[in-house]
Image (tube, rainbow, N blue to C red; front, side):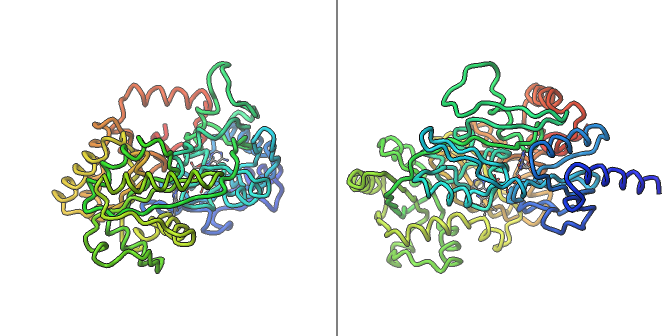
Length: 465
Ligand SMILES: Cc1cc2nc3c(=O)[nH]c(=O)nc-3n(C[C@H](O)[C@H](O)[C@H](O)COP(=O)(O)OP(=O)(O)OC[C@H]3O[C@@H](n4cnc5c(N)ncnc54)[C@H](O)[C@@H]3O)c2cc1C
């Protein structure tokens, strides 16, 4: 009874901040708020879901949570892949769906100021009207800007334009203490103390909640061309990647897809790329190379040079896809996660290594998978050395050991556990086991400086105190 009374009192206090219609207790808000897209998390209803309307309300919710020691989890669109927006049963889930406005498109400065609940597809529509473009494009366009800041999302275009942290100029933050502050701004450079913008990007809702984002924009590219090159073996594809980068043709997409993943995604999307059967049968992997430019004639030259280079590097052929086929292939590649899930993958990982270490890393992965009787297939942002692997191994213990050994192999080659999906709750055991303890201790001290009561996503990155 006493617990119920305290719960009711917290619910009333939250309603006083965000309005009675914007607080839901327990499971009343529905299943959507209970999970992300990670294959290994089980959904969980939070104590409360709140839907604030502005930054001041977010800050007031945090002050209240700190006062009562209640855990808080931020949720954008829930498309994350590592459990980082899954709420605690005793916690508050802050949904950003009502902070969904593009506040300003500053055409002259090529900057947009947006609220965190704007989705990438909504943003793109708003920017297209001005001939501008925000280049960060994770495979799921319903992802929110706030969520992409949370995970430092990447995606296929990062090879040319960088990831979220290269394209965010400033933030407004609500701190667990209830303070609101701004970092950066419409500035192309800052050398004025610690860079809090960069510290918060990729912090997975553990340091502060983002209530506004200043984004760096670029002119919208008018023309694009996509080349698809089948190769007789995966190793050759991966070894071709640094050579393609070295041409200086600056592709905005440089992806590898192994034959099985290509067969699966083209089958799922009913996509016929016009590759002759005999080539398809001998191809072990594919490289997708795309270039874009506002000056069309430059693209013709790029395509010519890249096509010649791909053949020199051992491609069986190099097809220039027409616009519709290219879009369909990119979309199918973006949906590779769903194809892997439908095929029964128990986990998906996105280890990153220096791009020249990819052949050795993938060879090691193959050995580890074979030794444990597991199946590991994939594709990846090859230009970034970011390998996306679907892991099929139903035995949880065997899978855990395999993942740990794969991550350790990546780290030994100078890599990191995740290139863009994050750590969340699901990769945390590996992160804590494989990261230097001095680094973990420093990260914890940084967290304590932002969040002294430890309310923000206490199970993400670290184990709760
Ligand atoms: C089919 C598919 C393809 C994908 N492809 C890619 C890809 O190519 N590259 C890539 O990087 N990712 C990819 N993802 C993962 C996912 O889209 C990204 O992680 C994305 O950044 C998550 O955005 P979201 O709005 O759904 O965030 P959520 O999942 O809701 O949250 C992600 C994290 O951000 C935090 N957060 C959310 N909003 C805020 C806020 N306002 N303030 C502070 N913290 C906040 C959450 O607490 C959580 O820690 C893919 C996912 C799917 C399902």
